[in-house]
Image (cartoon, rainbow, N blue to C red; front, side, top):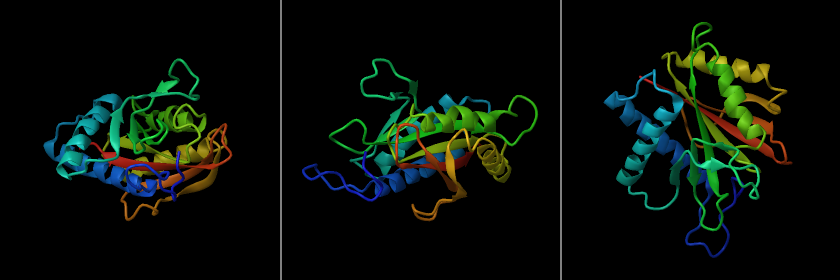
Length: 221
């Protein structure tokens, strides 16, 4: 997988910088989410897979309307393996945004989770689930093994964006040793001006390179 500041190898159809691909991916997500929100078709009671599926379909529409005929290729619920020799998937990540031609490892991985600021009731453990069943899958190499960047998308189901962001940040700090977090939570500004986009830096198991995890939050309205 290419580092953020390098283009694809010589001889491929066009030169692509993965940082530009990530910027494009973030735009597709935001534009698609805005359209979905205006339609009012997503319910807060939906599970994360159903919400991600609606986002997937709308991203394809946005990509077509923007006239983007090349990368990224948007794939929903693809298999993920720790090793290319694995015969069975270790898990199924919500999105792989493919941008390469020569290898199936040239993708930007995204996992989605429902998020609530609630401290009681059925949604009280969603922030913990975000960390232990979302972030952790990148850290242990089930998702995006040997990559240097990936993303979590939090679907805010209680309408309290600021509170949800704070709750996730608290949970990340609580489990920072478990998730090998080596740099504190900060606003991410390497991909242009992006609202509600943050990052954490981790050590991924089996890799010697720092692993940057983006955190994007979308309000289910």
